[in-house]
Amino acid sequence: MEVLIIGGGWSGIAAAIEATQRGVRVTLVEERHYLGGRARSFTDRVSGDEIDNGQHVMMGCYRALLNVVRTLGTEHLLERQSALRVAFVDTSGQSNVLDASRLPGMAGLGLALLRLSGIKVLSRLAAVRLALRIALGRASTTGLTCAEFLRQHHQPNDVIERFWEPVVLATINAPINKASADLLVTVMRLAFLGSTQDAQLLIPMVGLSDLIRPFQKWLEERGGVCMIGTGVEALERADDRIHSVRLSNGNTIEVQSVISCIPQRALHRLLLGSDMEPLRAAATPSSPIVSVYLWYSESWMSTDFAAALGTTVQWVFDKRRIRPGLVAVTVSAGYGIVTEQADEIVSLCDRELRQLFPSMKGVELKRGVVIKEKHATPLFTLEMVAVRPASTELSTVVSNLFIAGDWTDTGLPATLEGAARSGVNASTYALSQSLPNRQ
Ligand SMILES: Cc1cc2nc3c(=O)[nH]c(=O)nc-3n(C[C@H](O)[C@H](O)[C@H](O)COP(=O)(O)OP(=O)(O)OC[C@H]3O[C@@H](n4cnc5c(N)ncnc54)[C@H](O)[C@@H]3O)c2cc1C
Image (cartoon, rainbow, N blue to C red):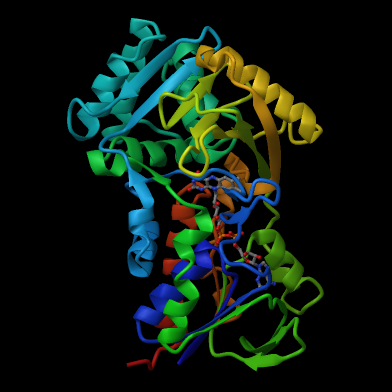
C-alpha cells in the first residue's frame, strides 16, 4: 500500500509520519530544495548565522507537533517554560509580567491576570470573568469577530489593547476586527485555560529546519521516499480516482492514494485547467507576517522574549544563543509595513526598541534583515472560517484525494499545530477510506 504526499511542510511531514507508523509506504514530494515550508531556517550570508523565515513559538498543547519532534528525536531542541510567563513592555519603558506560575492550570492564568499591572483593576476583573465564561463554555461566539465578542463581554479598552489584542495577533495572525472569535475561544480553551503544561511556551533553541532535519533519513529507513526539489505538476484522474501524478522532473508516477499538503493557493494552481477545477474551494485571503533580525553590538535584553505594546513591533526575541546582540522582531498581520522598504522597517524597529527598552542605551545597531512573508497564514475571517474544507472534502468526488494544511478545517488557527494535526487527520482518513482492505 502506498500514499503519495504532496508538500514537505509540517502538515506533509506529520502526514508522512502517521502513514508510515501505520505501516504504509510513503512517497513525499516537495517542490522546493528544502523541507519545512513556511517554517524553515537558512544561513544568513553576511553573518553566517542560522536564522528563521520568522520566529516561531509553540505551546505545550501542540500535541501533533510534539509527536513529530518526539518521533524525530528533536524535542530536546525546544526550550520549554516551566509555566506561562510573558513580559509586556510599553513605550514608557515599563515592563509588566503576566506570570501564571503561582497556581496550577487555569487558576494560574486567572491569578496572573489579576496581578497584571499596567491595566486597571476593574479591567483585570473583566478579563478574568470572560476567561471563566470561556472555560465553562458559556461564551457564545456565533457570527462574531474577536472585537465584537470582546465588546459583547464588556472588556474595557485597556485590557483589549494590553492583553486580548496581543493574544489574537500572536495566535491568529489577524486584526481583532477581522479574526473570528471562534478561534480565540478555541485558543483560550486549549492553550491558556488548559493545564500548566498546555500553556507553556516552547521556543526553538536552534534554526527551525533543525527540528525536522532527521525526517528524510527516518522516512527512508522505513522504506519511504523523499523527493526534494521535485514538484507535482498535474494530477491525472480516471473516473473517481487519481491514477498518477506528473512531476516537474518529467516523470509520471502511479499512485494509490494522494494527500495534498500544500497551501490553498498552490492546490488552486494544481487543479486549474484540469477536470477537477470545479472542486477548487473559495480562495482564502492571506495575512502577512514581517520578521526583522537585528544585529546589535552587544546583548541588552533581560528576558528571553517580550511582548511590545503600543508599537508596530509586537514581539522581540533575544537570539543570543545564535549570537550575542542578535534579536528577532515579529509583526503579525503586518499590513501596515509589509509594503515599506526594508531599510525603513529596520530604522522603525530600532527606534521603537529604544523606546521600549531603556537598557539599550549605548548599544549600536550593526545590521538588519527584513523577511516579508506576504502569505504567512490564511486570514481567518468569519466568512473564511465558515468555508474551511475538511480533509475529506474532495474525496467525495475524487475518492483517493485528501487534503491537509493549516488552511483546512481543524478548528485551530493556521499554526504549526493546525498544520501537523491536519496531516494526521488526512492520513487517518486516507488509510481508512482509500485503502479499505489494508490489514
Ligand atoms: C513568519 C511566520 C511566523 C509564524 N509563526 C508561527 C508561530 O509562532 N507559531 C505557529 O504555530 N505557527 C506560526 N506560523 C504558521 C506556520 O508556519 C504555518 O501554519 C505552517 O508552517 C504551515 O504548514 P503547512 O504544511 O500547512 O504549509 P507549508 O509550510 O506552506 O508547506 C507546504 C509545502 O508544499 C510545497 N508545495 C507547494 N506546491 C507544491 C507542489 N505542486 N508540489 C510539491 N510541493 C509543493 C511548498 O513548497 C511547501 O514546502 C508562522 C508562519 C510564518 C510565515
